[in-house]
Image 1 (cartoon, rainbow, N blue to C red):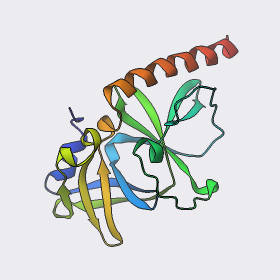
Image 2: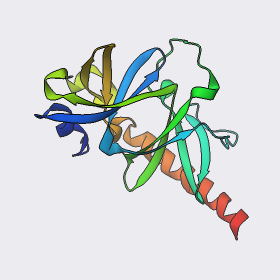
Image 3: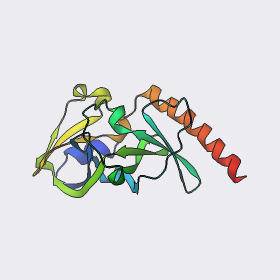
Image 4: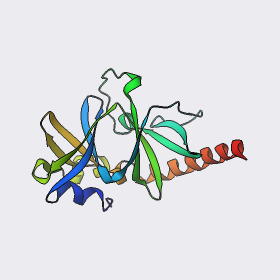
Length: 176
C-alpha cells in the first residue's frame, strides 16, 4: 500500500512541492513531505557481501543510515557521466516503516511547486511494485514521481532492515 502522504499529494488539486533530481539521464521526483534532508555525498562504509543495490552506510549523528543506489535499484542502466562531486543523498522517510533511508542520486536539481494539472497518474502495473505513481509535466521535460514506500519490495525491506541492524551494532561497538 502506498504511503498516505505520497499518492494524494501527487494527484489532488492545488500545488504541491516536489524535489526534482537527476538519475541516469532522467528526471525523477519525490513529494517534499517524504524528504527529510539532503546530504552531499560523504564517504560510505560498504562492508563486503553487500547487495549491489546498497551503496553503503553513512554515520548520521550516531545512526547507521543505509544508502540505496537508486539507479541500480530501479534498473536504470543508461550510462550518463556523473561527476561524483555533484552526487547527493536524499534522506527519505516512508521508505522503510519507522526508519529513514538515504537514496543516492546523480544530482538534486530543484524543489518546486507543481500544479495538479501538470501531474498525470501512472497505473501501478506500469512500474515495478508501482513505485512510479505519476508523471510531472515540467518546462524542461517530464519527471517520474516516485512513491518512497514502494521503492523497495517487501523482501528487500526485510533484508535491508537486517543489514541496518548489523551496521548499527557495529557502530555501537565503536561508541561504547
